[in-house]
Length: 444
Image 1: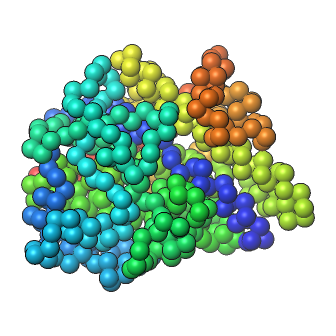
Image 2: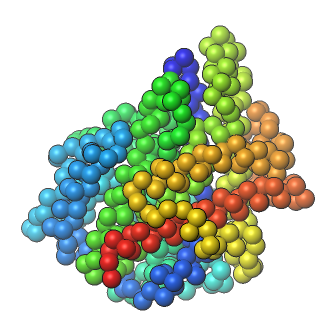
Image 3: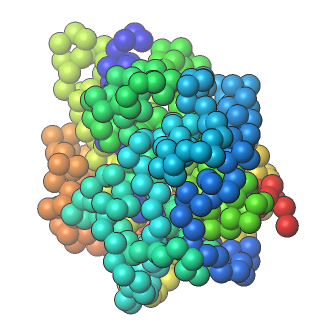
């Protein structure tokens, strides 16, 4: 039975590696009226190596403390190999110092961390020189990507809102690719210590980031018994790593990297507000998953494959429309229900103060509970062709079918838009609560 459930889960998850289409436009709206951000002083853009060179001993101490904390508090944590430990060495080159940080954080060696921005799409024209996607991301932009990058110069003054909103999308730029021992492009020795990929297809590059951007913390005891590897996710680790670096940067006068690392941490919080990232299959019950797997084991795999395709299609449709709605409103410089939901600061007080347990106990729990309603809203709000036909693969035809989907959605999208607004209200509230928590840790 355990083997049968894993057969379903392995092909299901790689297509769901991205939670929201582009975090940055949503983060501009979520933070633009938050006093701690809107009233913050301009900061000066600073190359990463300047921060590392100035704070090398403090960074080493922080990373060691984070690893000790993770070993004690994070369920299923994969211990960092001793060979990857960040050890201060004032004699080494800046390039070696940067590479040492990536190894200690166990990020992809291809991680860019360049000086850049995604400017607010409400601005009619870019205010800075354009920057190629390859300079910012190790993942090539798809034809339908909405990310547009501009260059920052060292020492240039920039608004914290722009730094924060830009960084909120950044972990999708290849930070978490090929970090497991069974990934074809995994880093050379020494091993990163994550072992074999716990779920998803290890041969699919983009799918290898899934365990760092998903959290199946609330599937229940039966599911956890049948598929224990699904409990091995590293979202909480990334939040703690980036969040700790943000606090250190703020505290030591490197304000640019304080806002930048804060955005990186918030990305992983925001991913778990997406129900398809907090549930293995929000549109299916565990008994149904077990039933279709049993049929597949007996030689009738059609229902199992259909479930995989439908879950993938519904995720893509939700992401597609969230992005289209947000970008269309930004270009018109108009507010709609999604923008209003993202800014709704009254929601913030509905949740407990930020703590290390917040990601699992609040964000993921809420998104998991919203899974069935979200899946149902997608089915009601989108044409049946896109979300109810197991013989149709939306992901394989997304670029061609985006305009057709947008046209066919007219007149039947209210239920879906209302559900997306609910989810984005939580996206904004949890993001602000997490940021307040990090700012409190940094002190005045």
